[in-house]
Structure formats: C-alpha cells, structure tokens
Length: 173
Image (cartoon, rainbow, N blue to C red; front, top):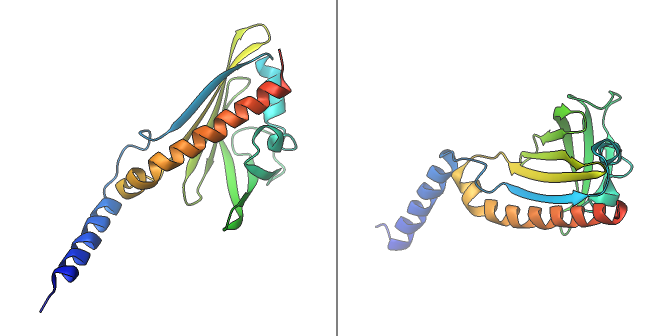
C-alpha cells in the first residue's frame, strides 16, 4: 500500500523535475549597478583590465590572472580565484566575449552558474565616466532562476556596490 508521504514525495520529485526542464528568461534576476567616476573611460579601462588591480576594486576575487598570452580583446581568457566560506577555493575560467575600446567589456564563464559580467563605460563629460556593472546568470532552468536567482541577484548587487565604492576611493573627486 502506498502511503500519503510516498505520494507527496513522488509529487515533489515530479515538480522539481518539471521545473528543472522548463526554461525561463535569465534577465529577470540580472543584477545591475551604476555609478559616476571622475576619470576618463580610457584611464578607467586601463585600470579595470589590469589583472594585478582587480583585487583592489573587486574584493570578492582573491586572485585574478591571465590564463593565456593573448593581448586584451575578444577571446582573451582569465582565471578568477574566489575564497568561499566553507567551500574553500573556487577557480573560474572567464573569456572576453565582447569588447569595444573604452566602452564595453563582457566576460563570460561556463562554470556552474554560467555568469556573464558586463562593464559599460560612458563618458558623461571630460574626466567623468558613468560606469555600469551588470551580471546575468545564464542558467535558464526555472528551478534555478526561481530559487537561487533572487538570492544571487541580492548578493551580486552588494558586491557591485562595494566595487563601485572601491573605485570611487581610487578615483576621487
């Protein structure tokens, strides 16, 4: 005889299976932050794209280094190392997938979360740049987007705010 508990457990597994298969829009829980910095887009890009400086403006990354010998541009690969509580060290391989000089840089990874990180720079006035960070997690299953999506958006926004704060300290008025 099948108990009510077994039916409920089977139903839950069925729902999880369906949610895993259903795809949804990944931009729903994308994180975005914007700030104004007192520097030119050229100077900002040189600072941001220098692997030795990444830990200064993006403190979540414990180490950021070039993974190949190519010059900066589409196809360039980087290795980001994160020190995560409980889990320990996590290594993520990132590739530059879009690049427009002094305007846009997009990095993408095929790691578990499949993040796409975009840095957009727009010159508002001489030595005044509007910097926009955006992060989208491309894992499109409804199960992922409706459970981890809101939490990741919140945590990512906090990190982006912290990065903008760090950059404002580096490029003061």
